[in-house]
Image 1 (tube, rainbow, N blue to C red):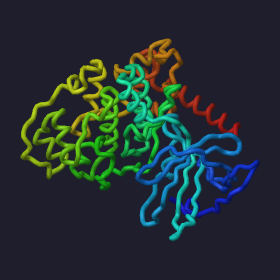
Image 2: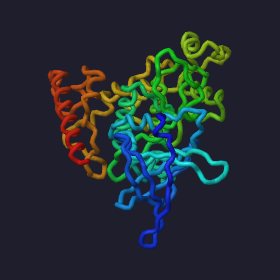
Image 3: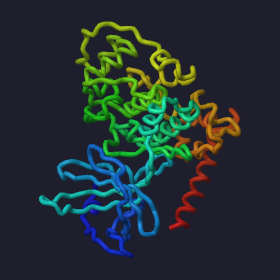
Image 4: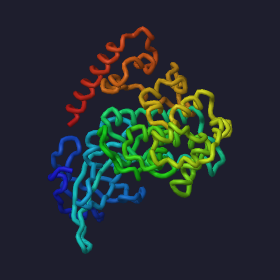
Length: 391
């Protein structure tokens, strides 16, 4: 984090019309410029390993989420830097940030992030469905998974791995079916050939190479985690539930079967070779025959032992599983319109131009990829102009 981001500011209290408001000079995430912000806390949202999240309202009526992070100067905090770089409809947006010193002794530095507020998570959606003994609608699963893959593909295009994708870190607006990825506290831009911490990602969603302590991993650890989330939307519980790292690996093998000796060596040279050979269980059976054939096909491509054989998130968007979303007149199960699924930016369409005609509804297979990208660039310019005009 750069020096100006770490400079603490005073947070003062002001009374207005009998209400206590906090006032701070904060920085805009977009350009780093300073602005005075008056806000008050309006309830808890959640608590994580690295901080707490509270709902706040600003004096002009805006509603946001305020994430408070205890900052240890001995360790890097990439969250602000990464969130400022992410500009995508399926990634939680950072609006403001500021640092302050806590008053309780000993004084500590705290980083405050003011972000988009959404009242629900995929975790709570799954939990409610389980308690009500009611499956999530298959079409809704398509809508959620598509947005999760699209947001992650955008991060991966910047070489950023989230490294903690799980239902708790996926925000949902159940009224509109909009999905946004949040909590970038573990996210990191990965550099090929450089080692990274292996003890990352929540256990139930941790890829085999991470469980085995491999530090030379890539962004495909997110693809594995998304596969686990995908399965959970059908099962209404995690597909792999281990009490420890070894137990987690055992649970994966119970479903996917024992890796081949070649796979073991590639995953990690110290992979336990004494494991009893076990045949895979058909994913259809493991998921209680709930998913369609197309869903099983996509899930199989995600839950691969070998990172280089896992489907890329952008490529997954072109899978037949999502064809229903691309149909003319497609709507949510309650009759409401779909969220924005196909408003691709030029950056997105540059990832694999061969797929572009498969991704955009109504496009002919003969549509030249460069034409689609040119249209996206024009859209980007229009959006940029609107944002500048709105300042």
